[in-house]
Length: 420
Image 1 (tube, rainbow, N blue to C red):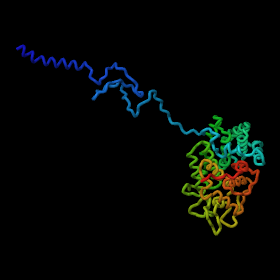
Image 2 (image 1 turned 30 degrees about the horizontal axis):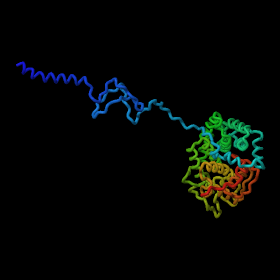
Image 3 (image 1 turned 120 degrees about the horizontal axis):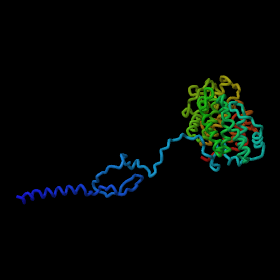
Image 4 (image 1 turned 90 degrees about the vertical axis):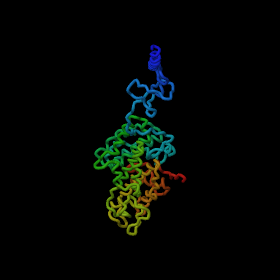
């Protein structure tokens, strides 16, 4: 009887003992808590033996171990809030920088004798006129440009100091004026800052750059520099565009520069590029349904060629008649457009060729109707001859214009176009 009972209980006892042992002996793939841990890509992990079906262990904290995709580094860097684009331009490198208007390398090839150079120095040394951008006839801007040109050519530091002093004094003087005055006066200050490499003075450059950024959208009357360029197809708009292009390049603002170029291309006659201008009377428009700032090639009104005419400026003299009533407005508009074209050209845009050489056609039209450049428009002929290889009679020393000057020194030679 006992033997039979032992035969029954003995197997049961063996099963109980085996079950108890299985709870205390670790199975392959389960790690004891004192196994040393190692760092793998910043994530704390334990060395372990590979098994076919590992049993997961609870983590020490409630934070799950990150996946490979979002695995942190050994020393996670704090997330930084993106900063807005800084208006401060990258300091220029003289050996590679082409310059907004002209480079030191180009200036180094120019003579330091003769009437053109002597005029630059004379203006640079003339009694200073206090900067007042709100006054559209204030000449401090071109005086400062002359100082910058002399410094860039000779390296005399006193001229650079005077440029910086005037740049700082000009800030804010546009208040109370109109965008016509801002457009006329701003561009030479920007070119001067570029010529002396103002970024070498970080504090002054930051102040100047912040002001330039604000000047693009500062409301003077009902307009800003930007809206004047985009709405006014006359001399107001062209002067605004020249200053806008200079500011965009100085700040390194490629979006602003591209928009400036698009508007200018539209002004030259490409309505597909831009057609947002507000035109006045259409008397001089060759195509009244598609108004442009410069009439296209072959345009005729009442049997007279108006190829190259500027309808928005020609209307200032009245309706179409022959000969037209003379005004100075077409040349005034070209002052802004030629500067705009040169600045954009140096930035890589083929402005001088746009719309069948629209700017050359505009000059030809004025000479065909016997409205030659006079007075403060004379500097433009040096620029036209420089770009197109024409031979319009140009005086030296040339008077400074309303926004620029000294082209009889800076742009006196024909610029040979690059090979196709």
